[in-house]
Length: 129
Image (cartoon, helix red, strand yellow):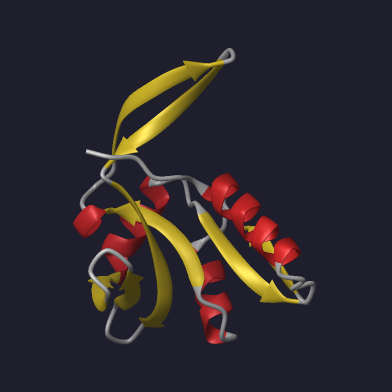
């Protein structure tokens, strides 16, 4: 077992990194709530998208939660952060870069949409200013 992080943590960490290393020509943007088509538009313009899915792209299981300072925090079992780097609408596939295995793999477009939507459409991009 273990836990990961959601977009807010990635955004804050990247902002801190950019500031510490004087990289003021980059910005990190939480695009959560975006559509699959929005992701494909970023990729078509050369911008990989950090997306949230699950290990092996199994259907999300939201079965853990904590109450912190009066706010409920939900957690998806087997949450996994990946980088979406490609798509082929003709083949019906989406290409993911997976840090846990150090490899690229394809999932069906339908499977990607199901899992991405099931993970509340969480996504982050790093853009050049």
